[in-house]
Length: 312
Image 1 (cartoon, rainbow, N blue to C red):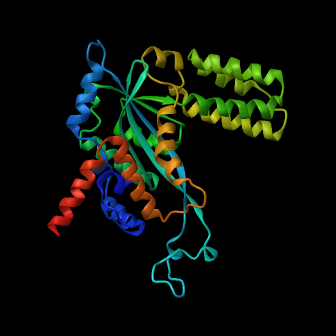
Image 2: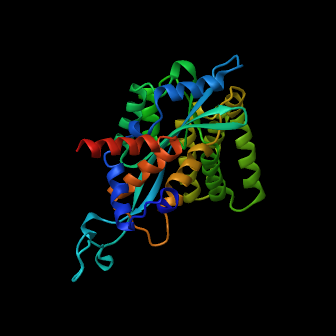
């Protein structure tokens, strides 16, 4: 592709080296659009409207197939380093992703994405960096945070954006209800009716009635008792995030499709390939470049790399 576009042909090994050198030490701020660019997108979304536009912050986890660092080594008679496949076992590592997008009628206007193989504290620090850099213009938007209800997401959001509207993803909520109905009612019509009635009550904001109903139910088995307790605990922990009718009237989404789509195109399509097992550092390099591509900042990433090489 490089040869076709530029007339410059390089080996795959050299391309591999250049790619990782260009992505080395990139942070979420390095691949994010500028504050001015984000402000322009927000202004375009607010044009002609009486209310501030909705800015959706989606956070979710994904996974990537990785190989351990000890897999690096030399095979006899080979100069290049290659992984000794028979001597290591692959692992799946958690990818923490976030996406900011503006809602413009029926359209989703992408603002920025950030994905890395990292722990929950590191993801929270990245979110804090975005806030401190002014890349999340809270004063000009109605910030809405959509998640699957993971505790670590709620903790970081509450600490950094206490006034944001928090939404529990509809599909994850429905999944808990279906598990509980299957355990209690089995594969019966009664279970389906209970799920539909419960989802309707949650949509109307009657989460208290749902919790009371779960408390009155008598489980038919130990499995049903466990599923019922899990469902009650889940809904009780997120009782302020399930008022779907009120949220939709306010223009907020009730599903996490935005971040799920980001996970698919940035993580799954590129890194989850047959036989592909990534060193963690290499996967993070690829994530940084993929995010830069979707954020529209790939040119500035490599311009920075070029300046660094010329300065050296």
